Image (cartoon, rainbow, N blue to C red):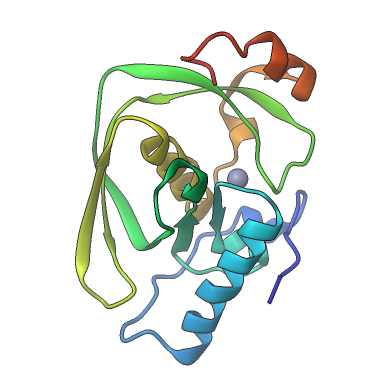
Length: 168
Ligand SMILES: [Zn+2]
């Protein structure tokens, strides 16, 4: 089921989340499935539970077009991040039409619980790291507008930067 995506100024985007309990309830399993339907429909690459109005410590990383199967990250935590940072233009499904440059650590290690209740770890220095940081920010009530170094406008600027691989 496709769920409506919450947009600013909805306060749910700013509230702290609650940890998800295991074993996963039927409701949470259903929610994960619905979040997947929703992120596919929205053509997004990630979605956090507050974006569909739920204060739960849960997000999806969805980079299927890059060959990565969907990764539901439950109760995630960044346990280490590189000193090296990279600035990339980001947008957000909760902030339609708004884009800006966001500087983040290039590499992160994320610990989380998978849908079966097992502890899991992600270590990445490219797109998974970028999306994981964006989604974990959502779970902390942080949005890209808090982090923009430069506000860009959208597609026309994406095109201008499209020959710079470090930006796109
Ligand atoms: Zn977002």
